[in-house]
Length: 402
Image 1 (cartoon, rainbow, N blue to C red):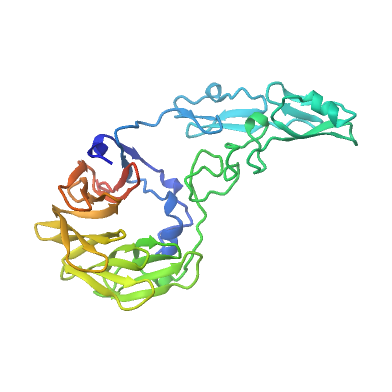
Image 2 (tube, rainbow, N blue to C red; image 1 turned 45 degrees about the horizontal axis):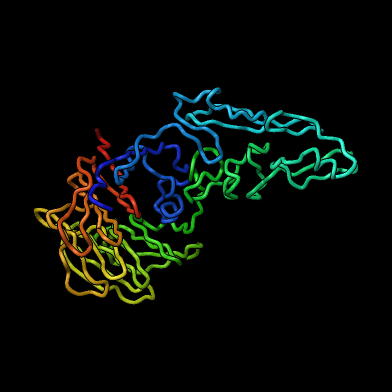
């Protein structure tokens, strides 16, 4: 990603009704872990900085050919798919619905003629001749009991739902994970064919211990979910916990902590401690195999932490500004990557460390050191941040009291 990433900011607001009602404000790691895919607060925004391409959402078509768009330009006329086998309507939200209109007994729906009678036959060859070149029909045969031709509608992905062009209701006949009524999972797809991806996912509680306290940060590896509980009941009363991905008893990895940031690599778990009473902090490390916590660094009020194969990075608040720090994962001398910053949340790729800043900026700095770069400014209290191969994303909290 180059410095031109700041050329476009796109805000995407997720309505509050997308939040699963059954995943309320529980003080449980389960609610945070299982329901995160669709929970974006309606009071803030999610933003993406791209390489200069993109724009406002416009009308278009999904992969099934069904049209979608804004409420202003969606109408019965616009939604018509020229398929007499479907009932075309414009739904609330501006997207089109194409529901299969069943034919009466002894008839089937032809995508060009509508409901027509099954051809009479003596042998299957009669049926093959009647439907020559019809790609929507498979398993063509003559039913000896009725002397009528029969067929199975083409269902390329074998999910039990043919495409609308063949008289079915599948929104994507190339993907068996997408068909009407399929429960949503957190995979970025519209599994249920209702034009909404990852909405209302099923919340499976992996740990129902109500004494968990206040989990504030979470990390995951191939085997476990890890989280930190705030020190709500005085200094050094927080903990670091884990639970297997498939559920089971939770494990206390460390107690007597004041944890905030959290990260995990192939061998260890890392966290920062914030002592809100005296303003001190520490960067901690614990082998995944167990043992005593190791203090990697001490400073003032530590913030977020991220880790790669060789180094651990963290933010450290000091008087008159803050620093973004780096250290080998095995310990050693700390390096200052940026100073005079107010880093809130950190993200990492192979080239840079990214952060949201208390000054309203989104910034980055090379992992090997160099001049910090401002990707965006004037953001309304930027909070969490994430990065992929093409973009950097962040949320803004906004002024809730305004």
